[in-house]
Image (tube, rainbow, N blue to C red; front, side):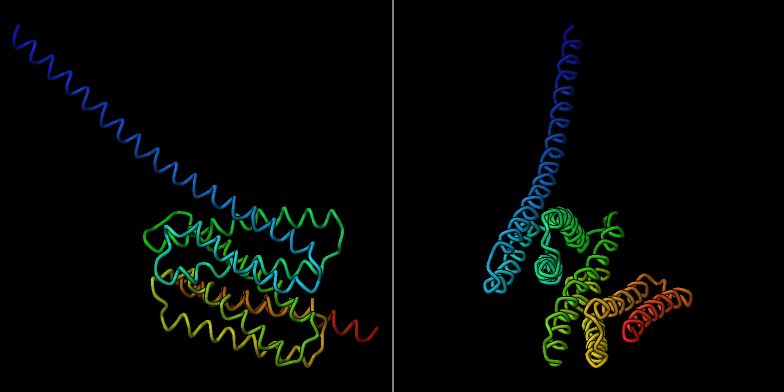
Amino acid sequence: MPISKKKGQQLFWWRESKEKRVSQRNSRIGIKLNKQMSKRRRFVIVALLLTLGLFVIQRMSVERRGIAIVVLGAASYGLSLWSLRRDLKGVAWIVDLILPTLYPMAVALFYFLLPQEFLTRVIMFIVFAISMYALLLTANIFAVATNRTIQLLRAARTVGFLLSVMTATLIYHVILSLNLPVWAVTGLVTMVAFPVFLQGVWGYTLGIKLEKGELLYSLIGAVLTLELTLALTFWQIEPLMGSVLLSMMTYVLLGLYQQDIDKRLFRKTTQEYLWFAGVAYLVVSTVVMSRWMS
């Protein structure tokens, strides 16, 4: 009987210990899920606040909108930093936040060129809120991937690539629409191109520090974009066609570099990108020539 009683006590303590371990494990899982959910809630809050800021800017007078857009960019950086600060390491504090800062400013600037209709505004606000949320998710994946391997990295790179090209296209279109002097147009385009290329390059290396190769490639991309912009100013084509050509260059250069990082820059891949650039150039040239002749 004493032996049986002792075994019963041991069995009781073993069960209690097992239940405690399970409870602790579930607690850790719950804390982890709560952190993930709180981060996503922060992304939603940031996206909604920036959408509200975009709405407020459109209600301002034209004289105040320029300063308001700069304030929107600063707020975008601050809010993005607040939502991502836990995982940002090294240069990610700056480079990973380039797109979340530039994209709201690009949309706010491009909004001036859109038809001032109620339905257009509603659609734009909805698209902006969704895309801003997706951009924050992408930036979060990049920040986490600097520390460990993550499965969603390839999808994040695709989204980041597309939003980089979109952001550059919107800003280029606005710059070309302002009828500024040549030196101002080329200077502004270069100031936009360099950080866009830098973020696109870093999104494939994800280093804690920037390497010389990343800075060099970003500089080369910015210089080539400057040269194309200079050529477009002498060509005197419409802003839409000019922004298409500039965005095409951004697409091709970023695409080629990223394929090279992935060790997939084969001859066929290079030809595909060059064919795309050639087709885009021919289409734009045909449209411009037809308008000149009409």
